[in-house]
Length: 633
Image 1 (tube, one colour):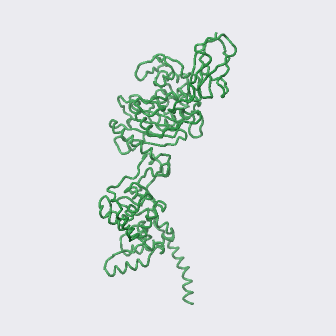
Image 2 (tube, one colour):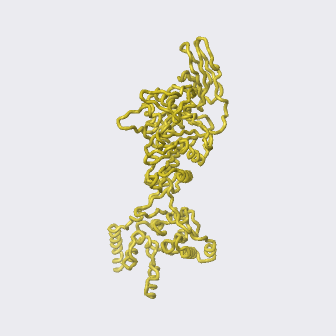
């Protein structure tokens, strides 16, 4: 009874002492917490990995990341009584000690998985003192983290050859798949690698790796079934693969976690970019961005040639401030449509003209004479765009750019002026993709969704850009190119109902590219990107946003029934304007000013203010237009 009383009184003291030691000497978790940085695609798959400090590819591996057969092999090969002991297996230690005494040397260490986890957290020389520390740490790890925590420490820190640590890193590097997708033989190789990672590297010692793998398979179930598994096991991997490194510029900017990147699209567009870079001159780079038209989420981002210092690959060129060339012109036309200054059928003169000291010329230094506004935009003529901006005012364009998320960067001390129309401002690819998304989404800005441009004006300007790609490509795409002065920047932007795509090509240092144009360099790349995007569905109902589907129209073409072409009317109090075809609601304009109208009807009343000539125009919900001139006597 006295000894029992002593024992009972000693237990609390022993537990208290253990607790005090645990608090005073917590297990060193620094290696377990020093992980590679992972960035995930929108579906949760690994998009890109950046190594941990020291250049180690150490990926957190949880129990849910590995298949049950891998855990079974690990326990069978390393610690059969793992579920039974508190971190230390007395039977295994006794066996190891007996073998040491008989052989005069260490035959087996008797280490449990918990002791191995302790050694992985805090590598030490292999001696008796280190073994004693491992025993204490193993008990401490089980006390603090339990069996699950011990397994996750082992799975995360187990060496896999070279600078690979953790079974997720091993699975990706040796098989190109996550561990959950590995079969029994592949899982067995990873378990075996942890024992002697350099001596069993399959790319350097394939035969040794194969034998060690087969031994792990046999240890799990030493019977006919294991022999069948060994017979069916394939060759060990002959080389080490690179860990995922898609969208590296974006991955470097983020901490970790999910992105909105579409992994398969990113991989496909990076292939397009890599092939294009091989055709580009020395020191010329590129950037590509794909966004969702509605949500504005980034689906693809290529910031440059990541591995090529000669092309400034470390820089994210989607953020570089460059001249947009002619790519702001669609916004100018949309503002002019909203202002009622012109309609697509308005005829203007593309002739030499001065605006104070500013005398813009077209790209080919020629002039087209009289032509429609729609043709002036499609041909990207400079004179008409500057003339429209002169009427709108450069501050109106700069304000619309800001509202669309584009910061107009001007030389210090200067104000917005007419050269904005032709690229006299600094912008980035990311900003311009957002601007085109705004135009394609009915003039709606990102975020709160405030209107930058009236929806019909935005849709009208966007629909005028729908045209075939010169070298062939998908149909139904609205696109625009741009070239900055001296060929320093070649741009192309495109939209369908689902995506907006931007392409920039240039030298990172801003030096000229003689002969370079957006049409020649960037537009073919834009077409290739659209060929790899999922086809945009045609909407079931009319929308105010961009109507650029390639399908044939399901309604009659929009046309004016009254007044007829070049009609002359006596002075009258009330005229009924009528239209047919098109998608309702219809908008009637007189000299660019909209008239009140019932959205369900195809007619409206108008009272001419007096004699003279008037331009009558009707627009439908898809951006189609019809018009004529009318004279009132």
